[in-house]
Amino acid sequence: MRTDIKPARASRALLQHAVTEQIKTYIIENRLKPGDSLPTEAVLSEALNASRSSLREAIKTLAALDIVEVRHGFGMFVGRLSLSSLVESLTFRGLLSPEDDFRVLLDLVEVRQLFEQGMASQIIERLDTGQLSELERLVDQLEGAPPASRSWRPTGRFTTC
Image 1 (tube, helix red, strand yellow):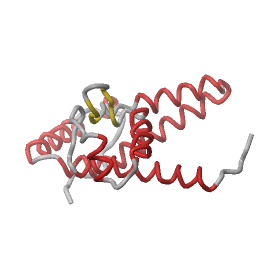
Image 2 (cartoon, helix red, strand yellow):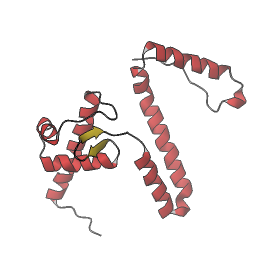
Image 3 (tube, one colour):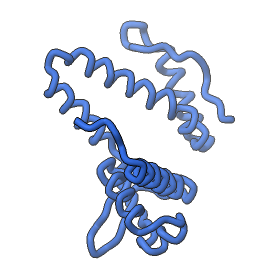
């Protein structure tokens, strides 16, 4: 197995990563949702100041992650944004190393915690007043439930920044 990477290959990989991140930033900054269309390849290439080949490679990466969906003859769209590729990867890893099943499960729990903790404040910031009120009501209801019926304990109230 080769461990050396030629500078040209390394710089192409860095460029592809940069274009991939630019596309994700474009989706976020334009508040695109799953199913929304993306600009054409030519428009995106110009907007991101990237070559078409770099753009195509980035799109392939994002399609594999379910972030972008390419419908041939129709265009590119924001994908379903599912976690199926992550779950499939962890499942495959478990199949390759059955003796590491426990480690795979721990990894899955850690990833879930990272997602939930990392996204919580961003999600709360985007909630409107009615949604925040409903969330507060649900927390009050949970806090009033008998201890045996709840598996976690809230640490505080939800606030927006």
